[in-house]
Image (tube, rainbow, N blue to C red; front, top):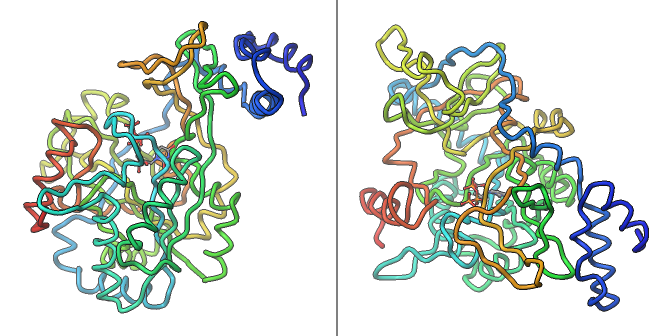
Length: 409
Ligand code: UTP
């Protein structure tokens, strides 16, 4: 391991000597912890800070055709049969992304443990398990659910599931694995300390989920079971349809390696990443990367050409994931509220963003896969994300949508 002298020199090279500010006050264990974190940190991330405004050059963008709701109405039964068959053949697993910190919500605890019930307890995790069980009840078989957590919330998440008897889902079908962490920096590019003996580390985004499955060994279970498809979804959409047989069936029927659930944009200016083709390969373009012309472009039917926003629900073929797992995803720099200790050693919990975190995003995986089928779903049936306390994508809006869909709160 790195000793103090080495660490000093190393940090001087990167202009990060503030990380040792409290070293003298630490006991032996604290010193070791700090030095090992310094050794593990990826300093190359710091280079990204200066380039924050630089948007990666895009290839040629074109609209992509989706399976629309209209088409699904016609072929839904065929898709459903195919999807159920794959589930019954034990070819499908699900991956719940629950490693995020949900800073916008500002809830103290893993987001999935939030109770949104009114007359009873109803937790976000419970909503998701209920949705999954609708499918497994119909199929007559269960499927494995892999839950990604982080060092920040793993213990609490695991305990919560256990305390609630896994909300009725078989314990033997639920697996937890942890994602990797990344450092945080202030606006001047100085890495932050969270404690005198530890760096401010936070989950490194949802893009590394498959690599983390491999690294933690959880992928062995996927392989042992002969799982061919993984359905990945976010924790915060309480109307999330998991292992949706029609979606799975459509992807299988079209003989593609992945699919993305999408909703039609509410209008040209909705701030959502949309699916498109980039140099002929599937891709997701962020709203701020789209020109006015692209945003308003119409197709032959007079509908928006770039119309389909992603909702973080994807299906991937496992052999395709294996093919791309070692490809490097770009790192995004995001401004966040980051608790830290200041020069005086005081804990500060900022009210507004005070620095950067580094994240890899799952949407960048879409450009790596051979093909991807956008699959349209109805927003008010399948999309009720809880990102904020109030307003858009909030607890309030999600509750209203749950009620609209007959869920008793
Ligand atoms: P969000 O983009 O909403 O990020 O995550 P977040 O960090 O949880 O929330 P904010 O931005 O701080 O408010 C979308 C999904 O990806 C998961 C989240 O748990 C959520 O299901 N996620 C995000 C991870 O699993 N790991 C991460 O590092 C980040």
